[in-house]
Image (tube, rainbow, N blue to C red; front, side, top):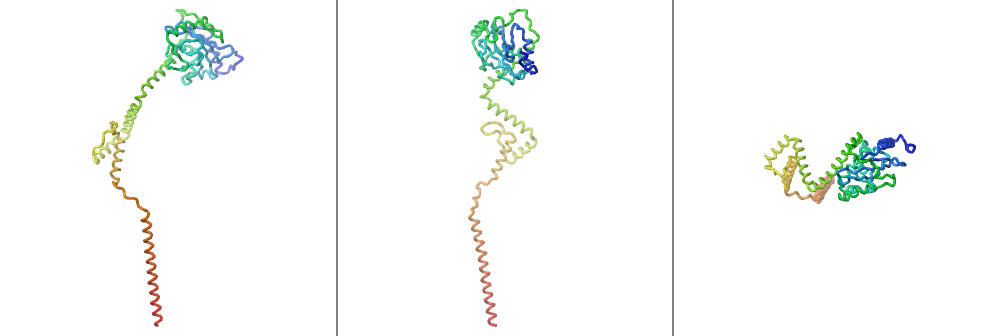
Length: 320
């Protein structure tokens, strides 16, 4: 397999290192890549004790992207278990459905321990999740021992080491369990946010309106308290008492809203009750006609006087 892949690739180096670390099965999990495909792993996990899956051994596939470990793998269960759908990519914070929550420090070992930790949790309608009854899950746990994978030839009866009371987990298991607990905590916190968001949808408008009113009031009060107090006192002396609340809501007015209301009242008081009628364009035409008539009259009078003057002068010359 080493000659088949580029050994300088970060994904190939990481997967080959993890394959060497997970070569030997443990009491709780085991995973190895296929002989002809380094980017497809088959795993087996034991059901968590003191749960509906106690006594079961479950088999599945892990399909890794070429960008691993920068991008998360896809996880598919092959054994009927009553918690995850068979043959479908399951939706977890460590799977390809949530690349935003994946961390490159997580590994296949972390994913295996996280799967074991996720099994007793509720499906909550997530993609690839099931919510079977406890009786059905216990029955499937017993049947899981008879499962045998056709692709890798792994049998669930011999896939893992037998449970012993004196078994001690390794340091890698402790580290992986700590990371898996963080993953479980993230999943629980994301699920707890969904009912709170849906339950508080009805009261959201009133909450937002109160928050906006209080925040806007505090910001406006901090802008210029002294100037606003002086303006408010002047408006009280000149215009009388001001309304203490917004009509219809009962909330007190902020200083800025009071100033805007007072300015509107002043504009309304200074505005005349009956506005003057619009000026008609005919008045301008009449004025122009009158001026033209006066000018023509004066010109005609001047012409008449001139003719009279010339006639008298001609008569005087004729008598001489």
